Image 1 (spheres, helix red, strand yellow):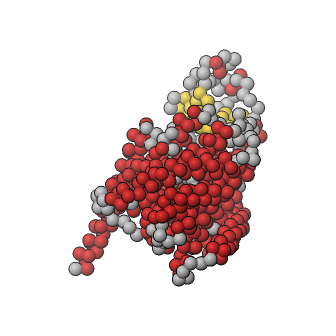
Image 2 (spheres, rainbow, N blue to C red):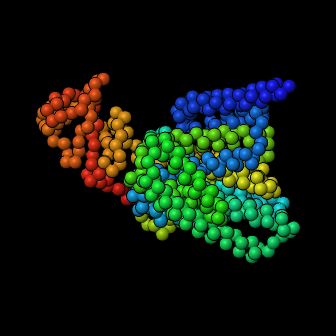
Image 3 (tube, rainbow, N blue to C red):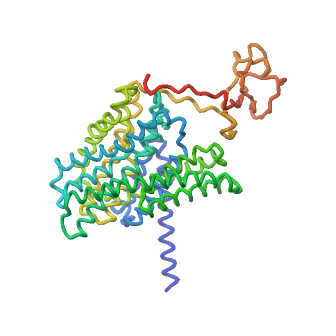
Length: 506
């Protein structure tokens, strides 16, 4: 009997693993079709999750506590990778603008959206409607950097000036603020219920303000402290190979999140700050290999979060909330998000109207709102299931409507810049402190003045370190006779790689 039970449990586990692996594999294959139509990969995972769920293939998954725990780990990994990839030199000129959008912008978006919900649909929230509506706004206030840049890179679309780093900074840094607001409103609602009645508004506002300051303060302190401590440790600890360094950095990130949360700070904020400090250390061991490893893990956890959201949502429960959710989503995209962007960037005259409009449109929803929408459900907040289902509709609406039109919007607003083709460096990599690798294929014009490297008048500070000729790899010398079609890998020293940064406006 015990053997039969064990066999049954093993079979169930194997079937779930089989189903999940098939869903991921099918979604990745379908992504080639979705790419042609500009459909984000996340949408396919949402759809497949719904297809496999209770109303589809019958896979039942309704444990929000487990999903919330998985989501917190996933969000930590997403923010860790985003922070490590943030180049401080690039974001420094737009640090103030990006920080305002990631903090004040999120607050304004939450307030605008919450008040819209209150005045249009507030009658449907029977318990403390204002706070419930503000909670809804806070859940949906952040944008998703991974979704934004996967679409931009996938469609081969770049943005002029410093729009891309500004959006990257805002998207990577606004999840902590949205999470803080979400937890604050959840705490207010839960404390009101536990207290046995209505709590005075002044007391609630005071408690919320104190909690906000503590979360921000402790989060910043822990982030900087762990960032510089980790920077020192990573230089001193000698591990065997890049995978071990990647795992160590991952463990540091998760520890930073947990430590900050344990003492009352915001864990996501602390994690992001520590990651930025570690990522900008030029002596970070195996930097490129570590980032590749974590980037793959980030894609995996984000796609699994969308698959999990699809499993949690039952399509049969959606019809009553589709129209209200679409109205809220439209308000966020067309009013709340643009209003917050224009207000935050009003003091900066070097940001043009067209650039503000583009920033307003690139407000994609993604993994963050999915996680934040689970918080009130786990806490037992009244009607939080409605919020979660609405988040599903709005996220899907944002990915389809905004995600599929970002390239077109950038051209209409004249902020489009074609991405430069990635140079072929034959798989070679060098440490960042050595310089920058680029590639070039020789043409007839290159060989007009001679067929050797010394005849080509290479710019000062450049070195040709490898040549590929058909299937052969050649380490060049000054006397080597070059041929048309040879592929060169060129090392440009750091001193000669000064990039002229474009202003944020034309």
